[in-house]
Length: 97
Length: 204
Image 1: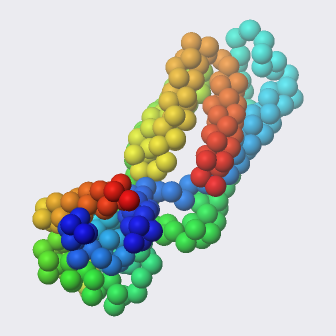
Image 2: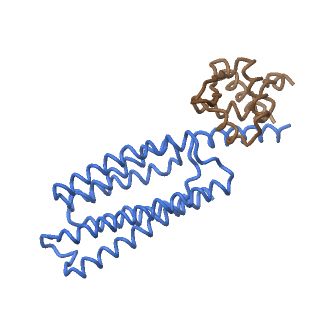
Image 3: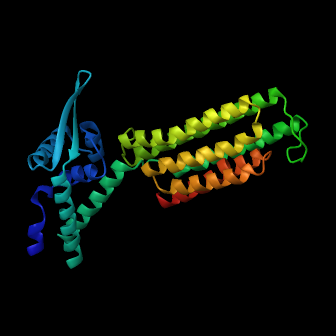
């Protein structure tokens, strides 16, 4: 039971895992590219990314390219550490089975 | 529970790979590029024969400018066919696996591929301009190999081995000037076909 408690609740959803995985190996990724990588809808990405932002795991940048608004994401240091420790607990859990 | 965790991990791995490497590159494009190159080499060899030049003769070769223009034309035709098949099979594979094509990673890969290739292209133009034809084959192989190694960071790492082979071949060919056609047939033909088959089997 002990190890399961350590699994980060913020990363329970597949979409959030996906967002974090993509950002771990990339610098800034914009909304459209993230959406097509994860194969999800606008609303789905928007709600999960704002939840991750609220936890301080990702940084959101909003800018204008010409007249179009563009949103990009980047992982924060806190997010990086949290995700790595989440991966470690996943690994431990699987090994203990 | 355990199965969900395994799925989580494989999801993480696939997302990392999808987003950081250009994985739509199909082995088939390598095979076709190689076949076009071999066909082109045979055609060029026939062209020499038709012009009464025995390619494997040891004597000094002097080509007419008409012949050179035709050879350059063949080279460009092969390049376009090879690139075309590359784009075709890439689009086909990305559609099949539902992968996005025009991503940041694709752009980075193309940029890293293009820089050594463009420099090599200018270098070859200069060699043509100065009538140093014998050096063109080694230079194309060398710069192509460097370009592949450079782009290898953003796609399957196997491509770096192909790049290394092209460079080694290019270095050898520097010491056997006058047999450019043979080295081209090996480097752009046979190596591409081998690479294509290996990659196609590995990532099917």
